[in-house]
Length: 103
View 1 (cartoon, rainbow, N blue to C red):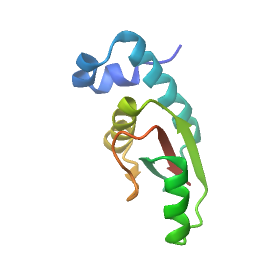
View 2 (cartoon, one colour; view 1 turned 60 degrees about the vertical axis):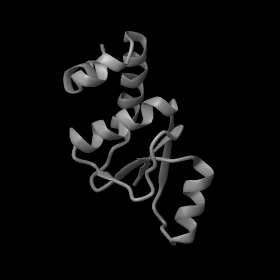
View 3 (tube, rainbow, N blue to C red; view 1 turned 120 degrees about the vertical axis):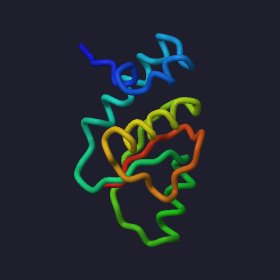
């Protein structure tokens, strides 16, 4: 059984999200947590834009994308930044449909 990540950490988010939305966010968080490695970075951005930004800045890190809704991406990224102390990537933007990990 999946532990309620959002329910335990973000009381204020609970007031914004319905129970089925909390379940969706928890599923995405569980998927991301399986892939976290030391010194990785997290953010939200669309795939084509992030790939072009990485190429323009000559960054050769591996990227993993996780599909989410735009309204959930900020809560997911903030959870990992605040609770898990993962660095937020400089290419992060609010309200984007893909959450990514730079490994």
